[in-house]
Image 1 (cartoon, rainbow, N blue to C red):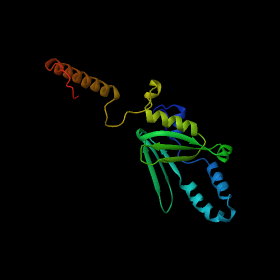
Image 2: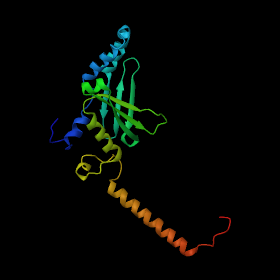
Image 3: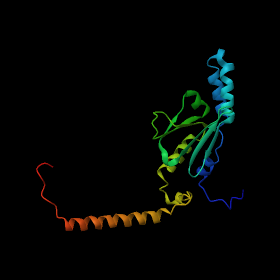
Image 4: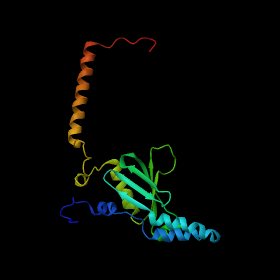
Length: 189
């Protein structure tokens, strides 16, 4: 694709939007986990093999999706606006391999993470990217890189409309108070 036709994105954002698969070190991590109980290795390695080879991530302008599985395909989609908190977690083996898990929590009723992105070497950049998207980009230099949602008015028009509504509500309240002076308080509240 010709780079002159695509909108300019900061290098970190472009790299994150390009992530589709976990790093190959995740397969090493899965193998090491399966070797913990040698007798169960043949039974544990097959599901881990299929999980690693079918695991896919997709970062879009609206949210993030994660899918995996062959017989029982699972897919999780989370919009950036639904994200409540983001955690990084890694054990000693993951740190040795340079990996970490990005745990994404939403306001759903569960106490655990709604989505866990694993096998990422760029975990800190992904966390920062998700925080920026969940809170909205405040830096004017990056605001142009985030397109306005399709079908919605630009933020400036929305802000102007909200200011107008607030002004009319204030005027209505003042007019009502002028017509109805405050009555003395009753002893019963």
